[in-house]
Length: 540
Ligand code: GLN
Image (cartoon, rainbow, N blue to C red; front, side, top):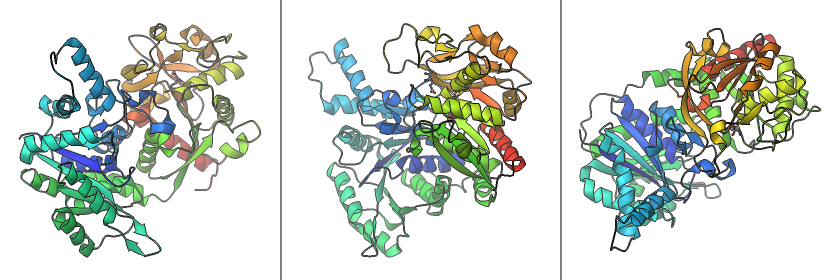
């Protein structure tokens, strides 16, 4: 079949969940046997979100090919089980950089370079790049931002041009908000009408409207919206608040979103999507009665999106262990010897979060010393693993002031040090050790047992690493390096054997955990946490 293009735009306000809607549609199309991918176009000037802090943009997600990406790509992978790449996330910065490079090369010699057609052509080229691989039947393109933003205009204009060029092979899904005004006890459709008008003003007629709402939208109200917005009433779909985002594909299917998309793109509708494995997961999630209590020690506690992939990996792991998940965020800046017992003792398992820089690091050491001493299942990820190594050096090996050279360049014990390949690097953007690398695990390690294999491939995002000069001292004192990269021999996984579950990974296993294939390390960590909680008599 010819490749079909589906654009997802948003109106009224941001944070309506375009990523979840795009992911849900992709999930349904995939369950119907189609080859699907989702890409996100972000209207900011940064080349990628790698240089943004989590306060600006939530978690930075990393693709297998080493692209620092918007966190929506995490949703795409979790919902579809299809890996994304650099091509799935394009920013205004990337578009302009490419056009300016071409201008300097002389590709437009003699011409004035303009937003239309040069920038829009470059956007269109990027939109179609994945389609041109021949690997996909459906390309879902999410346009970041809200219709009407100055920044997103060139993207919207490109969508208008593509709809014209691609005809039936292209449709537009517009996501808007229907607020409930409590004082009037009414849902209001006016913002939706305005936002559709705004789209129409720039030449785009949406084919399908999805309305975010806290309350049920009546058939009468749907008809009214359909009438005002030039769409058929069956193409007005509501996306009501649900307890879990993983319910959204099911809700979309109940309102025939997948059939609508097939019909409107001229694709035959055959049978039903194969959603059984997804439903099994949802049932586990809904039917779990006992709770597992996991703490995340980090410095971005007030931002739920900062550790998005870790939260989702834990949720999946809990569901597959037939438990509900209760996450407690523990502010590493506020954790100290005086309050650690009170804060950590109710927990069944503790995650020491990834991160950068000195702020909040001491709380991570306090937490790790406590967890190691109390033999609580503990999982260190990236900086969390590095902190495991430093805490062990200080408190077991007696290396006072041991540190990472990221925090203290003059430390007498640089147990975590800048990687050799990083030493000449001065540019900050896209220059970390990024993407998927092989890791060989010792067969008798906790990690190998969890994965059920000794060869894994996981994603990285770091500049510093375990300093192998100290490896012998650590191993003699009981911290084993159980995973390493076969080519560079970088230490990727450390463990303390004999503990219930004490594992640190230099890589980020959370990036590869999906609904249908939860990451085995998370599943095993949560299993160990549940067992410990029961043993410790924690109330569930
Ligand atoms: N700051 C550490 C490094 O660069 C860890 C990074 C992380 O946790 N992602 O190596």
